[in-house]
Image (tube, rainbow, N blue to C red):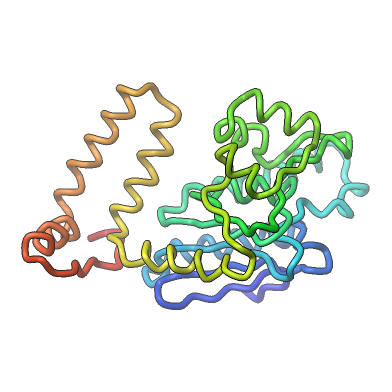
Length: 263
């Protein structure tokens, strides 16, 4: 597939997807969703890509939201289908069995904030801005924003942000638990890639298990979540990577983990 709205490259175990519509502040349109979906499938099927990083082209935006120029042509049914399409792509990103890092270099508003929240964690530039300003258009978030935001920052804070359309700077977003780390703008990609390469050196099946157990555990009670953890802990002991990790520790050497999710 030839990409028109994104760039994708993979090197040393890390894939980087760059939203590349800088004149539109990297806004999301149906074609961009198709391209994101294609990359997700590509990454899922490629054992050489062990971590995915998302970022935006240009200095202003990660993704400034959905492409509002598409809205005047939509009726109610088409708008619902557009929301469902975005939700489907973001769910695929969220459940990708590999770590996904949002490297937010500028505006992450509306659909851009929803996209970032679908990643495993968010690293942000000190120039980044976050928000769900859909209320200013007379609509609500449609790509999962009301739901993921509430789970990340709490119900009351999510309601306030969605109702006011207030924009948060990176430090405010970090204080609320939306962002994990904030870096100076000129260091953001370098610092993000350091962590991405660290994760790429870990055992893929272990990272997948951590991601699945944390995500599934958030939707159940504590006892059930711990049972999921114990089951996954046991499954690890059937893998070559667990045997390699334990042996390397006992032998005081660096482990050589596999690249495959099947080992």
